[in-house]
Structure formats: C-alpha cells, structure tokens
Length: 474
Ligand code: NAD
Image (cartoon, rainbow, N blue to C red):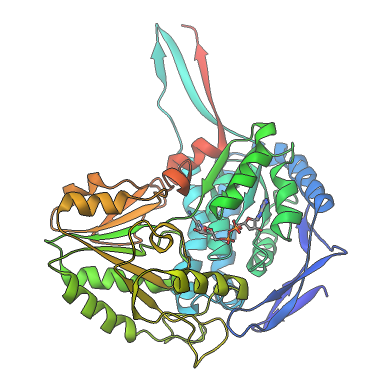
C-alpha cells in the first residue's frame, strides 16, 4: 500500500529519504481516534532506514550549510506558502489522524506550522551577536550550522511540534531526520511533499516512519547525528538520553507537565473560570495544560459552581464538526490509562469520571475531581486527558507551596490582581491572567522533569548552532 486516501487527501505511506520515497518490508497500522477506524498501513522503518536517512542528511549538509541565511530563508518561506496553500488538507488529515479539533487546526495550529518556518527564516537573517573586546583583541561571535539534527515528536500536536524544531534547525543550516509519532504519522508525509515542491534540496529533510522502539531508538544512538531534539514523555526521555550519551550529542527535551492554575483571593473569578475551562482543550492532551486548579477557599464554592456549569455545556463529539469542543483520546491504551488514573483517584467526582457512554469509543467525559488526597497520584502524575483536580488553600504561602509542589515545571498560570506575585512560581512559562499566549522569539522549555534547555528565538539558534568565538589580535 503506497498511498492511502484520508479525508479525500492522498497520503504517501512510505519514508522520505534523500529526496525519494522508500518503502519498508514491515508496516504498522494507523487508526483514527474519532471512530477507531483503520486508516492504512504505514512503512515501519528500522536501523536500515535510519542509517540511510542519516547518510542522506550528512551528504546534503555541506551544500545546505554553505548557503546564506537569505538563500535558505527563501526556501523556508516557500515551504510556509506551501503549508498555507494546503492548509485545509493538512487540517483534515491531522484531525482524522490524531482526533484534535478541525477548527483549532484551521484557525490556530496550521497557521502556526507555517509561521514556524517563516519566523525562523526571518530570525536567522537578523541573527547577530555584538562583537566583544578583550585586552584590545576583537571577539567575533558567529553561529555555525551544527550538522544533522534528529527530531522525535509525539502525537498530540505532531506537525506543529515537528516544525517548531525543523524550522529553526533548517534556518540555522542544519539538515534533519524526523521520526514522527506512530499514533499520528500522516501529516509528516505531507510536509515532506510540501518541502520538495518548495525546492528544499534532497536529503535536507528526511522522514523515517516507524515505532519508537524500531525507528526512534536507532536514531537516538546513531553516531552521525549532531543534535537531538525530543518532545515526548519523561520515561521515553530517559531512554533517549541514555542512548545518546555515548556520542555526547547535545539534547533539547520538551517533556511532560502537571501545571497549576493558581487562583488568588483577589482574582477575577470570571476569568479564572474561563481559563479553567480552556484546559479541556484537545481533550486535555496538552503538555502545558494547567490541570491542577488551586483556588483560594473564599472563592472555591462559587468557582466550582460556575466551572461545572461551563464544563457541562462543552460539546463532546466528532472533531470534524465545528461545534465540537472536546474530542476523543488518542488510542485504546491511552484511554485505559486515563480511566485507571480516574478510577484510582482518591477524590470526590463532581463531573464526568468515566467514558461518554452515548458516544462510546475513545470519548472520555470532561472530569472534575475535588479535594484529592494530597500527594496522591492524581495530583502528582501527568494524566494527559480531560481531567482537572481542584484543591483549596487558606494562605497565599500555602497556595504557592501547593502550586510549586511538583517534579515538573513546564508552565504555571496565576490569576490575581497583582502580577508581581508571579515571581513565586517555578516554571519555564508563567502566565498571569492569561494562558497559551507566547511569541516564538521568547524562550520555551521546562524546569525539573519537564525538560532540558530552552528553544525559541535566540535560544533555538544557541541549540541548533555551533556558537563560535573568533579572537582577533589588534
Ligand atoms: P512518547 O514519549 O511515548 O513518544 C514520543 C516519541 O518518542 C514518539 O515518536 C515515539 O515513537 C518515540 N519513542 C518512543 N520510544 C522511543 C525510544 N526508546 N527511542 C526513541 N524514540 C522513542 O510520548 P507520547 O505519548 O507520544 O506523547 C505524550 C507526551 O509528550 C506527554 O508526556 C506530553 O506531556 C509530552 N509533550 C510535551 C510537549 C512539550 O513541548 N513539553 C509537547 C507535547 C507533548
């Protein structure tokens, strides 16, 4: 099976290596979370395909690295144009493949995918570090391309997360081997097509499809890669770090979270409720999601009443319907995992708490659990589903202590009349009276178990480049 048709779009199921489509003897089956329908068999790469892709990327590297930033930028801008031209195809295929909302893809996610190329193309052209001076010697700081970048991504926002790394890596002059998630592999194949049509030279971007164990693992231990950008779960990250360690490959890790939404006594209650309801977005399969609601006791009753009313009004169903607010979970295994967390939770269920019986399949009801046992699994582990917990506090010190009581540190949201209090929160991104707003020039990444390093703007180029200091005598 070379091509499959998904939502009327023809998708090539093979790898993209050295500017050519390559098949594999092995395949894996791709299913849709919407109705658990079988979509097709996808090439399952292994060591052989990974070796071929890294070799192609190494071969393509010198010529791509030798181009100027504006020359590379021209190609990246054509890729962005190609993404915009095929926005509807990408949106429909991604929705079918990972079950996230079509309306989000149309309005937010896919435009951002295009921006991931355009923004970093522009940034690379402006990238300068001022010269420094030491004892009369001039120090000239330059950003050299680092080589082959391996990019491994998860299924919850596959194309957005892949291009968030591919955009700066290519803009910096690197070549790339992408291993997309086996639960949502399809849009990576369309991206390969778009980059080819935009004139990206053969071998500059390679896509090896397959499972983490068969295709991901050989990529992470390959001695031919110079940077490794991984987005996914903490347990996988441990295996990836161990595999990459012997080759001393710089790592950028964007991992899980268990972020708090801290509502102080002086908070705007309407806003706090609105921000809490937003956490059901993508059925809670969002790394940044503020799933721990921590609310001042004086506001708790009214906050909960309003939240339950708003959450009950959310429409659950097929993500292709523009009216749908909450869709399905990615797979049966993940559905069972989320169910297990909720069944074991030592907390009072005030909303949901299980499958949506009317819809069946992989639809888990938006769930709110109140007064969870402190330190128990439901408040410490990442559930990655539409499940919020609510805790209350009396003093501000208690509230901040609860918010920071996590091994993660990806994000935190604070609702208060006094933004200066945000300094007390420990996280890579802290939102005050807002959520999810961020410029691509700002640093993004997590503290603690949420990751290693920062990307965005200069931070991306610090990672994807060999930053060089040339000291010139007077
Ligand atoms: P996962 O760790 O299971 O898989 C991520 C990727 O790693 C997949 O492509 C998978 O095939 C690959 N992989 C699995 N085992 C591997 C191995 N041994 N070697 C190399 N690659 C391997 O994660 P997931 O379930 O796909 O995604 C959900 C997780 O991703 C959540 O923890 C979520 O918080 C996290 N996430 C983080 C961010 C962020 O920016 N911080 C964004 C989205 C998702």
